[in-house]
Image (cartoon, rainbow, N blue to C red):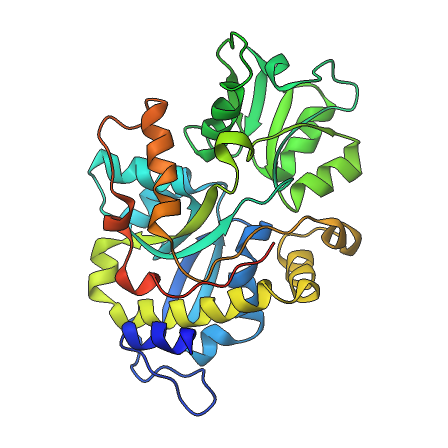
Length: 321
């Protein structure tokens, strides 16, 4: 059984019900910085299904605006792990102030799950029209602006620098309606939610062309925490993997947790386009992120993505869209 092989590889065996780890977590109470987005459904499912509890963990969700803003809290130990975009993690690693390790993959983009929206009365009609305009993102110097730039580079047009404004997903609909920004990069369920509430329309898919199927977010910790808490890491991976398996096979359960944790209504949850939920980390696919960062000048030296992945995070994969 593939999942069992993963658990054995991280020195964690199961009890009779297949849920309880044989080794006691060193730190049973975890603080996880997380965004209430569709990509985090496996963690929400693990919480709602008591998988974390079964693994000996009490996981506290701490809402963050973006991974970049949470890196200081991770470095200080105020957060034990962070769910967020990979660009912020690689940027932190490149600075050399905190050594980052990847605990688990989060999600990768499917078509229409990482979109640039514009107001319903916008005069922008094609990607190149975004040249020189104001764009809302959750955090700057992140995967949001990187993927936008990558897609715009394929238009064949001369693109003037964009102006990026940081705000939460929940504020982007108002910003579009009031025209304080010209466009916004959103993920699900907020693509569907903002379109439904404000009439905003898609300008382009930021996960297309050079960024198609791009790994968006994952779960990270510090090398210090991972080294001191291997049983905790194993327990978290076990519970999260069970959540990811449900996310990949039971849309109804995904809708339930997104309704609860993201605060969108049931209709919006039902209309969302699902992302891909891996149950392992693929070093080759993840390498696309730092390579793209290097291509656009965000990294001065190459980063080997696999060197940042905990060995226990690489097992057999089940994904869904």
